[in-house]
Image (cartoon, rainbow, N blue to C red; front, side, top):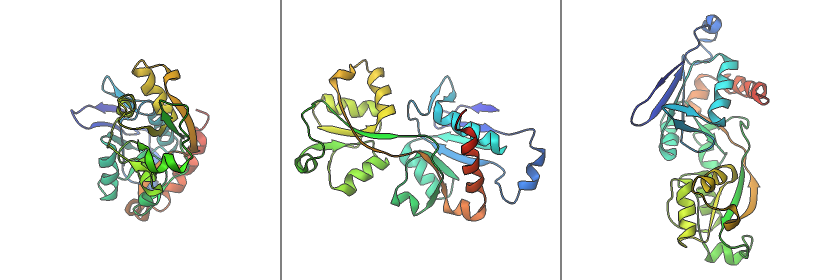
Length: 239
């Protein structure tokens, strides 16, 4: 294993020196799996030149079970998805499933759980009302599945925040009335900013599991790979 740190992006590459049997998979596996992701605390982040977090650890476990050499690149989320869409990388994670991504990539089984919730400064906001949907300015991380879902569902979406802390700043400044975000991510962001959880109201919207998207070009070239990947997920659930 070695870590290579660049100013941008950060890259982690792992080769399995003990993969004597890997040659047998040369036609059904890539020589090195090229994955790309975003910095998305606390799921995955970089610290002291290393990638950390439950998302990174789960992918490491899956790759170890498969004995698959791999490389993980960390970059902006919208760029990560484009790199897979144009075929420069094989897959991106952690992602929830949507119709736009399904057009150019195939989705794995869930790798980690996720809950979407509305976050606001008032416990009197009825997030299920038509008035909320039509009149209250809302937002989500730009380029995320939540962002596209808000637009598709007809909400009044404003701003293009790229960081969870920016979501909170927009709330505190009164620039939006509510934000749609991942529970785990927002909890970490709220704590990192030293804000009391009592100041922010949370209303659960839905569960939306997280997995890995592999480009259709990749799955066409290696048609057995996703099935093997999904089997390996099951062996890593309790680790």
